[in-house]
Image (cartoon, rainbow, N blue to C red; front, side):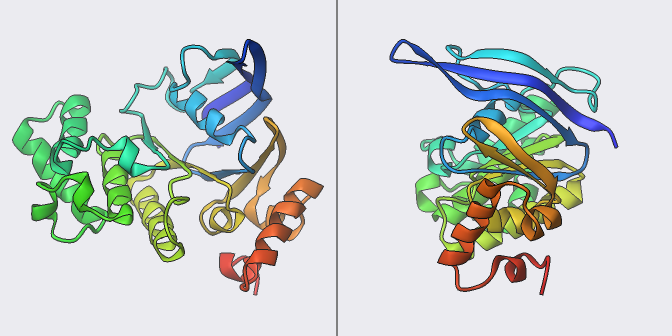
Length: 265
C-alpha cells in the first residue's frame, strides 16, 4: 500500500504569552492512499493541528519541525486542488455575502480552468450529489438562508469541487444534531467511495470515527498514543486513554458503541 502522505518526526510549536507550546510532538504517521483514517482525541490533543499541518494551513507564527512528504503524489500538493478541507463551522467557512453557487463554481473555475457556465454546471451537479433540495434555487441562495446541515453540505460540495485526492473533515459534524451528524457521515462515506478519495476524519467522537473509518489514530497531549484497525481499537484498545474514550461514550449513550458501529453485535 502506498502512502499518500508520510509524516515523520512532526513537531508543531505555537507561541503563547511568550512561551513555546508544542501542539504536536514527534508524530510519525502514514495516510495510505484510498483509506479512511480517523484521528480522535479530546480538545487540545493536537488532532486539528495535524489536519492544518497536512493541509499547509498552519498560522505563520507556528514553528514546524520534521517532514510531511507526499509519495502518493510524487510532488508537493496544490492547495485547494489536491486537498479538500471541510471545517467545523460552515457559517465561518462560507462567504456570507456570496451566493453558494458562485462559491462552489469559483473553486472549480480556479483549479480546473473551467468557464463560468461550465463551473456553474459543475456546482449544480455537486449540489445534487450532496443532496441539497432544489439545486437550481440553491445556486442563488446565500448561506444565511440554509440550515446548519445544509450549509455543511455546501461546504463539502466546495471541498470536493476540484476533485481532491485527500479530503480532510475537521470536526465537520460536531456543530450538528445527532440525526444530521449521521446524515453527514453517510454523505462523506458515499462521496469518498464514489470519487476514490482518501479521507482524514478528525473527531472527538469515537462512535462516529468507528462508523466511518478503517483505521483510528488516537491523540493525547500532542502525541500519537495508539494506532490500529478500527475493529481492534474498539474491541481491544491497548492504551488506558483509548479505553477511557470508549467508556465515556458508552456511559453517555444508551446504545453500545459496538452495536452502533456495526463492528460487533
